[in-house]
Amino acid sequence: MRKLLIILAAIATCSACTSGDDGSQVVNVPPTHTGAGSSQTSGSQADLGVQTMAIQPAFTKIKGIGKTVQLSADIWFEGGDVVNDVQNAFTVDGIEDEQTLDWNTENFGVATVDENGLVTAVSAGDTFITTVIDGHEAVARIIVEAESSNDPNVDLSDPE
Image (tube, rainbow, N blue to C red; front, side, top):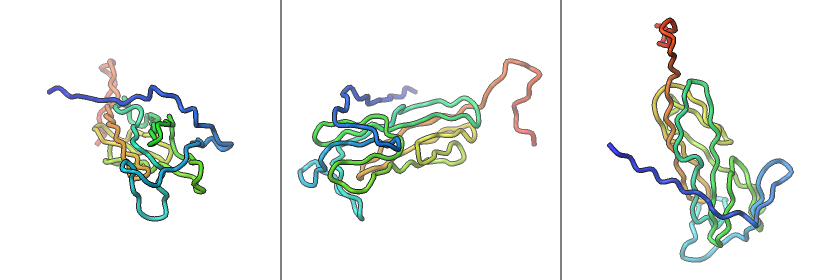
């Protein structure tokens, strides 16, 4: 079976971005509160004017239980600005509160993900990692493979 994988890659650079003192990213993009393409969020979170976003890498194989891979998000704003490589927190001009990505895993038995997008392999299998901001969700597929050995004297099976 053929699988089609579409990876969105940011080819633009963010001329409106700077780094905060704590390593967070500052997006100097005025928030968009109106317009047909503007997304609406509930609660106290302001509308950031996010148009879309993607996780990088969108597909990863992790070979070995306990190994990790770092994910990040690229975020495109309605005005055309892009912020790349967001792992957790960023701010938007005109909005007082720092914004954070919400990382989740579909299957904790295969891989976990922390608040900074660091994925840790738990067992062989596959899962999807998602992140959400401003009502937009991005998804990455993670496949975990057990380590193999070419040494016939090494037993990598589960000792039960």
